[in-house]
Image (cartoon, rainbow, N blue to C red; front, side, top):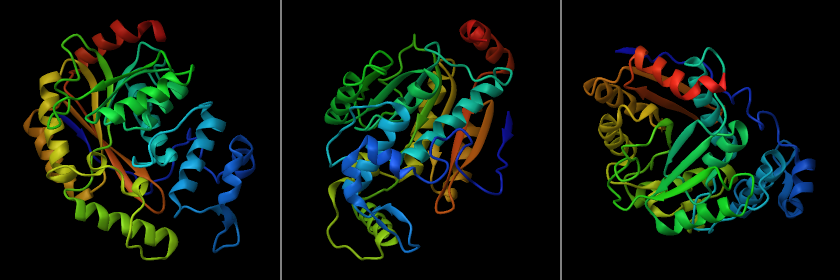
Length: 322
């Protein structure tokens, strides 16, 4: 087993990220005029969005998807999480680079590439970005029927992604891959943004801290779309337990998927994750640092395929893409 765990010293948005620089508020307010009502001068005297206001954040993301990704219809219940698009896009771009390493430096694009998003969420954000940027096909799974219905509604409402994304309901909440992947499925990438907290109290504490950092104010009552519904943020055992379950199940689908991956928010969880991956004899382990000056995270990716199996996969499925 080879293991490449060294990380670069500094994290910044990926070079292909559409929002690497400051937001073009002129362009964004043209695409979504209502956003103008939520602009104000920040403490540096620069016009900015009120990031402590969940409605403003949702409008900003709506404008980003409209202006940069051509998504005209994007809406979901306020009780669900509103994703920060630049960070989500970074995950997709880094995984594209990982595929390129196995494809003579060229990112394989088109609908021969299939990705699975574990916990697609009501916003369907990862599949949207992956389809628009690389023309990949996506499967999105989630344990909540209303969440799947919301994601499917977004897919159905946008012709550019309608034929590219399939939403699958995970009927057993304790399962991650079982019940979603079939024996016939061949999947290039599995991505996952796992539930971070182990309890409601822990989640609320983290959300209050986030709002205080954004606004400088303490809050007693949380807005629903800052808090998120429970399965988006909380699972028994938190992030570490969820990822361990995912790793354990991944062994059963070792020949169905090229790269498994997950975000890992807590650096303290890495040691246990590496140990578990070594225990199940993953062939390669990769760690990719992500983040901005304010927040850092990392992707941990693993594959069970040998070099010979990787070559066969590439020649069988990607050869026509070269």
